[in-house]
Length: 238
Ligand code: ATP
Figure 1: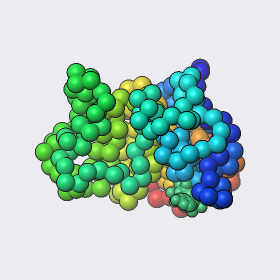
Figure 2: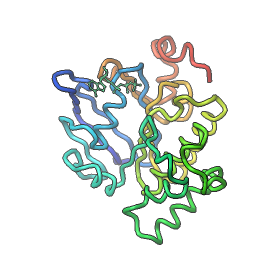
Figure 3: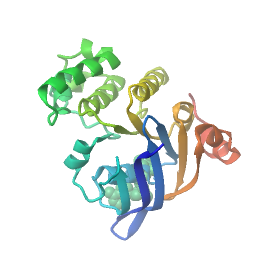
Figure 4: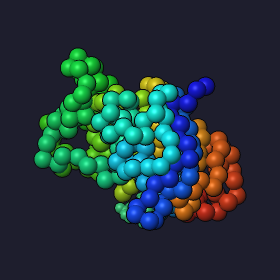
């Protein structure tokens, strides 16, 4: 299968400090790929650079096209989208208004069908469509952030720590929905500290330490690796 996203030899620096060093990865159509690693390993930095939020050295191709010099809007138009760690919703706007913002580049008829799909995936958002985003629970806010990203009809959705701060039951719900995205034909690049939950749903995984990938393989191979078990699976609660 040809890769949807190919990241080759990518480095990202904050001034003189290289937070990501020469990493390569690929995501195929319909795959869920996870990057696991400790706090500060460089996962967020890498995803932000793929999205165009941070400049990078190296190559990023998406659907056969070099995108590493495009601005963020053009990467969104190409089919990339990110749900940032802090969700970045507009708290004083309603659920539906936040969703509509995600479709500002999409023709009206497509936006209507995108909204229907988002409402099917997240019935809770439909129930709360007139509620202000700032009054939603943490789990609902995560769903809204994902829904807003999906309104732009991405081919690849990057999720940065979707489980952050959420109760285990809600985390299970969010991960179930991530699985449904794969069935809907959206590939997912998932950054997670909850390695156990991420590996349970992913097809493949990369392990990141101090800005570099130290291991990659099928989610099963990575879960079964004794070093991964000792470093990342030991104290997870779900
Ligand atoms: P986390 O789960 O905490 O977000 P992470 O694996 O996503 O961790 P990054 O946030 O990408 O890691 O951070 C990678 C490294 O870059 C860390 O050493 C961090 O301190 C540093 N870093 C992150 N953001 C900046 C910044 N704006 N300026 C300077 N250094 C930064």
